[in-house]
Length: 293
Image (tube, rainbow, N blue to C red; front, side, top):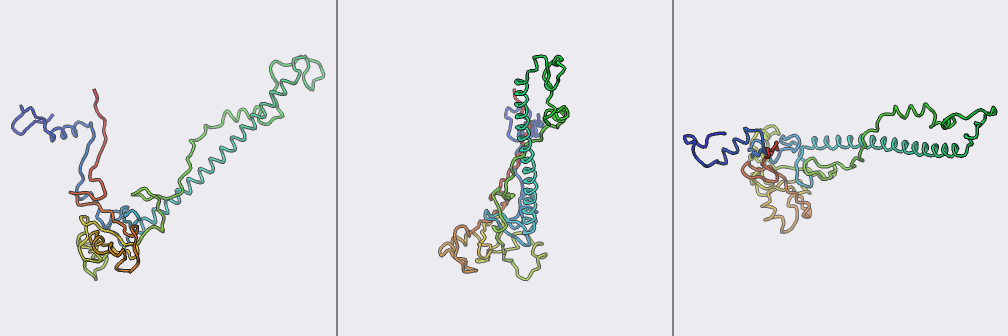
């Protein structure tokens, strides 16, 4: 256990800082750490690659992606679903064949029981034997039924155990961030307004995030501390303050002139500043074993 103070070890107060330090050193208990600014994604970065977007698109929930990254993700998920669906169909066909085989074996077993009950084997003669010799002990094997032959019994004993039953895969692809169903047609192209026109994409991305883009209506700088929204008809990025002050009165896109609905105003998800969160959790949590009395 650590000391209670720098020059005092006889204090009766066990501070919160000392308790957290001892917990971290002991290896037990749940650890919680608040992430810093370096662990937060910028507002104009892709949620998959975590890099500034060159061709950004946004989902209806407001998550920003690089077009190439999200299209590749959707294609990979569709191929995975197709493979899992084929495997599920093969397993279902195999289980159907096994059920049919079991029904056939049950019918053959019932037929065998009927023949054994109706054949007078206990009267001293065997079917097809005119010598009148004694009948053998126990029932005779039915060699004329394929499922009751000795070879079939050996095959059943050597059959491997059934594989784990697969669940039917979901047909829809889901967004990697929100977990909701996502189609390629739902992606909306985003057009950021550069703070300084005429810069190349490389020069623009080399600048600080707060110096890259501005609001398409008011010219205010955009950043993680500024709530933003994307207008679906034009794809322009504006601040929520300008939406409430200028757009919601007429509900019309000032850049394209198209009529707007509430669903056409997509609030852009942002990471925050490190001091205040915006749509994401700023606390990292790790569960470890707990000592109990």
